[in-house]
Length: 531
Image (cartoon, rainbow, N blue to C red; front, side):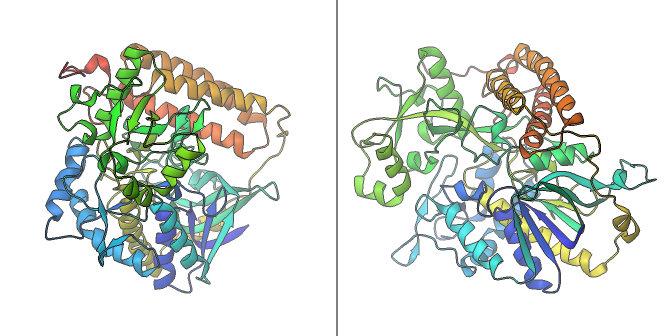
């Protein structure tokens, strides 16, 4: 058994910034960060574009950033939350600069990029690996904090709530979180970690689909275990597909071609070189992601091609190589010269706007359980995330959650009797699964079903079929779970099944198309506006 004051689940921008804040304010507080892979593996690490923040007040202002965010989110956003995040942005940005994160500059000022949906240049970046640079700076700060302990390769199985405490009934209106049961992969042992406060910062769920820009760890774990603990989860129908992932014949994580490339002038073409974005939106390549992704999806359905092309041939070569060195290198590695030929691109599952319901302080519907980042529905993104608002969300809500956590820790009004009474994990009667092929098979079945039936464009018939297929997979996975000693692979599959259920359920409840959600049976205007 392990006891801690604060348990942080996840090591991206949200979890790390939250832990640093508490550590600085309460140096005697014990903080444990658990992460299921290496400490630096997170969605943050792969964020290429940058951080949206108003820094040049001579051309830009908060209201413009607020308006762009609301427009991208199809006005499903919470306006108060959008205002709070945008206005807090410069303060939170200055903090990570103080923690050592470096951003590109030109003539002594921040170099500002622009991405789809933004009306001004306001994206601060570190070349095309901004997330990687932020992660580096935050990890360095965490590793220099004596009261923070990082446990890598520790996989959360389930949250601990009252229903684990002997003799306690679960009151859905008053659920308490007491920590989590966590699988130590190295020692093959499930540990009980009890905590006064728990933060879920587990990122997205991209691997519920066949193709995604997300790292292999993005399996919706936090959303799934909060859902199983009866916490409130909403807006799971809103899944953003990034229009331009580099095409590959291999399923899994695809390399992202940042939206900033289109922001700098790249054009979309069919495989045989014809422009097509003019048919879908007056903004063409700079339309919001949902519009561009649906346009590409439609062109591929018409042509039968596997991909479209991104045309960079007219762009400034030196500027491109300086701004996008990793994208340029990846093209060369794949045998593509972006200044002579089209980069083959396809839409891929990218960012989840829905998730665990939280308030402005990151508090979930479960007492003493906070959540921050992509695993949440904070109200910031609405029906579609504006490019480069996600790193910002992690910083602002990480800050707010830390302030509230410090307040609760100082009050120290926790249920210590329940914390002491939590039992150890019981594996009695379970056996080691001797055929992992069952897990692999079911995971592939789930991903194929979600990609084919619950993808960029949905329909009533496809969603009804998806509901039936999901139920079959759920029953097969539940049977495996009930008799097997747990492995990360089986737990991830269980979580992906929960996430797929929520996406399908929330999609079926929709009465109109909004933002990233598009059901052709609900469409009131044609997809193609300008033949």
